[in-house]
Length: 100
Image 1: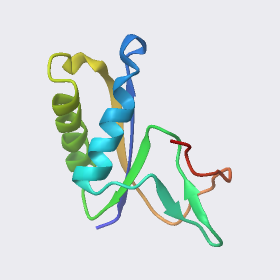
Image 2 (image 1 turned 60 degrees about the vertical axis):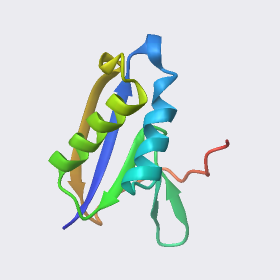
Image 3 (image 1 turned 120 degrees about the vertical axis):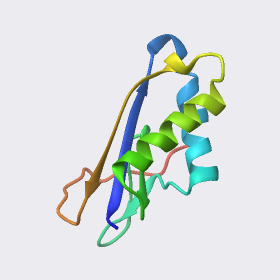
Image 4 (image 1 turned 30 degrees about the vertical axis):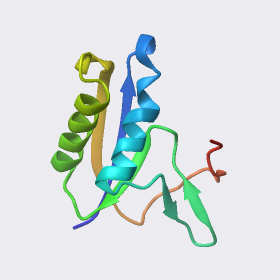
């Protein structure tokens, strides 16, 4: 199976939720916040993750699960999400690791 990119937005009034959702997906579902470039690790935008071996539908299910678990009383915190397969044909602006 190809790699899947997952990106999402949360409502402005609940933007505190995005790092919780991201942490849940990385810690519990095996997502990564970077991809391997030719010469170095390439870090994705802060609400974009990647995972190998799943389908886009599975990725959206994981996102909904993360939103439910991290924001149990406010599922509406998740404003939008998109998941798509990607291959080695990509271009990116070089980036640095996230600061904690």
